Image 1 (spheres, rainbow, N blue to C red):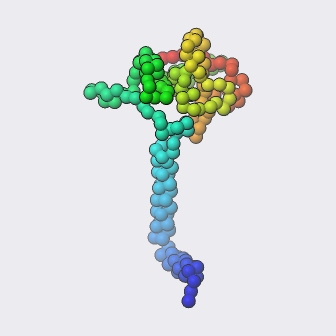
Image 2 (image 1 turned 90 degrees about the vertical axis):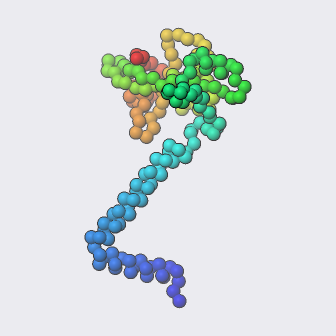
Image 3 (image 1 turned 120 degrees about the horizontal axis):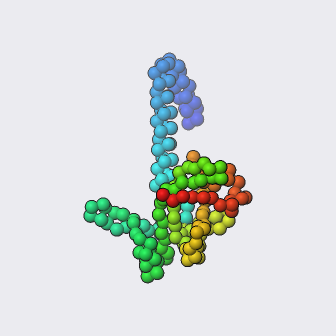
Length: 187
């Protein structure tokens, strides 16, 4: 009586003989299978990255996004800074309330070249509430929001995947001199 492994190798030899006989159609089928498997892996990786993997923050399952519903525009997460301050002061249902706004700006380097970049203006407690720690330097604190001046503290992102961060463009990824500053013009 043949063992399971002997049956497997016997089936493998028989399959390879059939593939050699069929020639082009077998190659086409193998190519289609490889393409299908590759596409399946790519789609799963995308869904995993966007939907299944938790955010890289402390307690991602406890994050809540507040929205207002406008009958004409639908759900929106747009609040004034004053509303944020009131929610932050008076809320007893939330551990922390954070604010952020996505803006477009132009970056100007010492050489005079400029490029467009996206940035987020965030509340002072943004990083502490999310439990994020910096790789180098410090993050914003509520004291940064309390003491407004002409000089705004900036937190630069580190490049991930195919993105190139402002830190990489300005300082060539060597952040040993990141405290030199950067000039931004708001639009």
